Image (cartoon, rainbow, N blue to C red; front, side, top):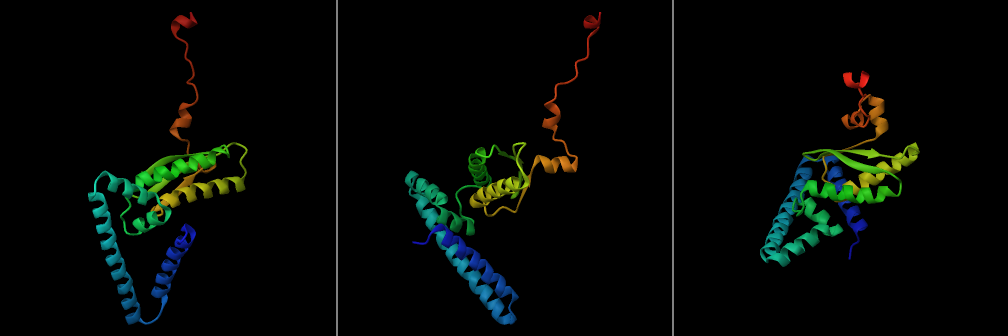
Length: 191
């Protein structure tokens, strides 16, 4: 049985080969090879979609099986490749953030979702005040790994730290609200 790492390597290799195909000379051969790949993808996608329909139609046990397939590391990636994953992108991003939160706790760091729109994700990474640059890079890597593991189909991922916001001069509204408002004495208090 192929392991998750080997499967990921094969998917990367497939992408590399398609890229090399695009760079190769010989327009006729290139077009034929691309059509072959597209046709195989369509045939496999149609077959997988029908398998998912049959399993789903079998009732609650089928729905549970689809859910299990969506969480299996190998099958999950195959379902994503064919746009058949049972969970929405939003659900998968939130799962990835949950995993990242668990891993970041031991570093006294947190991650929060700022924005999610059509595959464009923006998160804020809050680190302890004593985190150095290399630690922050490692924390970035953890967040990226957790999110791309669950949602490799993200369009883009932006990770913002408080240092990034300070450098830009941007102050989040919630930070403005943390300070108590100045108390203005009423006439009765002054009197």
